[in-house]
Amino acid sequence: MPTVAVFDTKPYDRDYLSAAAKVAGLTCRFHEFRLDADSAAIAQGADSVCIFVNDRADAPVLEKLHSLKIRHLALRCAGFNQVDLPKARALGLTVTRVPTYSPHAVAEHTIALLLALVRKIPRAHNRVRELNFSLTGLVGFDLHGKTAGIIGTGQIGRLAAQILRGFGMKVLAFDPVPSSDWAAAHDVGYVTLDQLLPASDVVSLHLPLTPETHHLVNSSALSRMKPGVVLLNTSRGRLIDTTALIAALKTGHVGGVGLDVYEEEAGVFFEDLSGTVLADDELSRLLTFPNVLITSHQAFLTQEALTEIARVTVENIRRNAAGEPALPGSSL
Ligand code: NAI
Image (cartoon, rainbow, N blue to C red):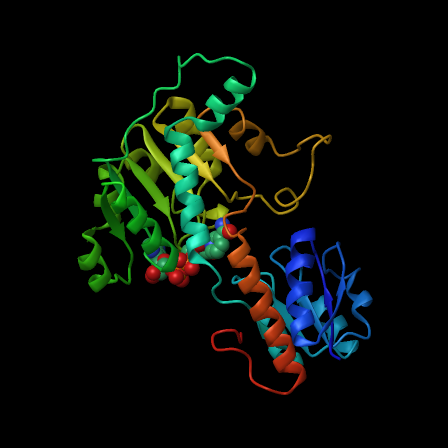
């Protein structure tokens, strides 16, 4: 029975991976700590190693895994910037990922952030719990009739756009690789970024982080957005220059922000830090704004997405052990 050493696990990972492993006939050895140069040795005796977004699979770690006769690294996520792929190839280590799980999960969470922000739900909820039934300060606005700008119309951006069309919003989109048939079918208009930014009441980011898109939302982009704009980011933290965002929030130019990702989220998001002192001054500042709503990279966290992540990860491990090719789109 193939054995997999699974790093950086939380209870929900263990539940879903255990269920899938049982079906596939795999043995999982779960570890709560992350994979790094110090922890790699614990993988001894395993056939595969399974990691998540904040594990480190750099050259020294990969060499250590190779020396332990590990021949397969299974990523239980889509992104792979945590892996030194050239080194993995040089060592003959197979690397697989889960290319897609539930784009609906991420699109729906984006809309959850938007509705909570524009209708001030967290504030209202906190008030009512304290028996404060006053409505003062809770005036929101209708999404119907407003304009949303979707930056990146891949799997998630397209779904988010369709949901917003359902609210009766006008939807503009920018993507260097437009999906013209889809846009025509859903009455979405492709425009340039320069046209999208000043025209949108809501701007939502659904594009990957690359050297070109790093700090796409900087002080220049923010200044071109409509006053009072609501900005949503469920993609990658480094798409936004946090310092510039805080400045735009302080002047009131940005009317609301919903973030599921943050530039410096590693070591903070996914962890219970209650009772400790938060050392990140910019995150602390963001948390003081009444019009900023932050979730801890949880847009993917649905039963459907976790089931699919576990199914694909475990199937790739089984296939690797059986000498079969990985599932389509999984090999890196
Ligand atoms: P996708 O690959 O299907 O689509 C990305 C789109 O962005 C493509 O159409 C591409 O042409 C476009 N794009 C690339 N460069 C661009 C640019 N400079 N300007 C505008 N568009 C550009 O990706 P998918 O699956 O829709 O994911 C979107 C984002 O969501 C990614 O950043 C991904 O990392 C993130 N994500 C976040 C999760 C969460 O839990 N918060 C979970 C899963 C994905």
